[in-house]
Image (cartoon, rainbow, N blue to C red; front, side, top):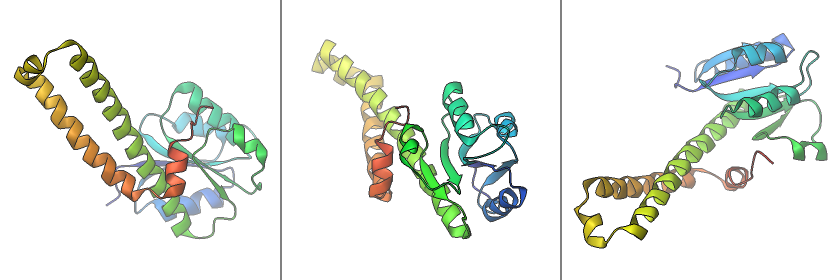
Length: 188
């Protein structure tokens, strides 16, 4: 039974796209696209991870990546390319870079799993920071007695405690590369 994450595989070389899809199909919901423009057609809010060929004839991976950011999609993106990474990648907002040929299913699976872990951490962190800001705002304006008497404040405090634990557990599963990538601003 695949997990509920959706992976979009984009490569103009059909045998590569189909092989990647076969490798991931048992674990994830998989969509395939054989061009950049087809990728944009198949991209929606349900897509969690995009494996994106960097060089394609109709619309390059870089163009697709720019559109992903312009449209505000929150999916994680791994560029997959036969092009050796150079300094030009510093301007691209992707989450992982895989050099072709990717000949092991395990390498692809690990990349997707890593990107999904980072997404989980990102969502948890956003929620945590939002709640922490609300708590701080209330604490500057309300007395300790008022706070203690308010049921919603108590629920907020409990949720913050729970999220702190979840963040800690998720961060424990992130390695140093994950953490470096997580705190790198993808929009720069």
